[in-house]
Length: 71
Image 1: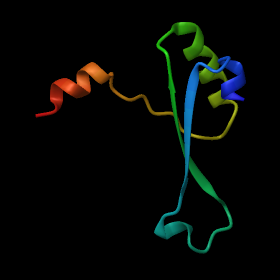
Image 2: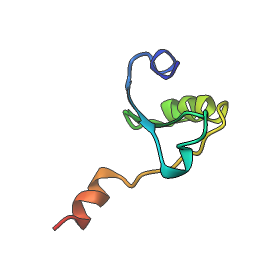
Image 3: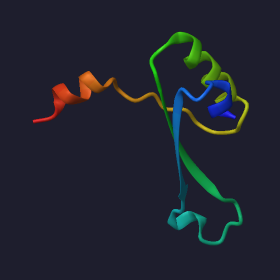
Image 4: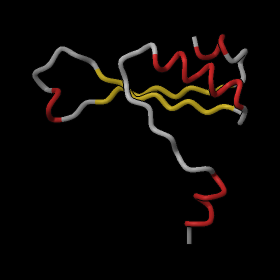
């Protein structure tokens, strides 16, 4: 849905997440990382879709801020 909503201007990485607490549970958890070209229009579309699911959303720092913090 994200790919279609952004007309292919996004990249989505999905990884299943298993923790020690999840061993006896039947609930499956996943982590999604969505990368997209910076733009308010795409951001709002992705946020709207993300909010329709029962998950948490985290904002990552900008690449230039990460590069400045690296040795």
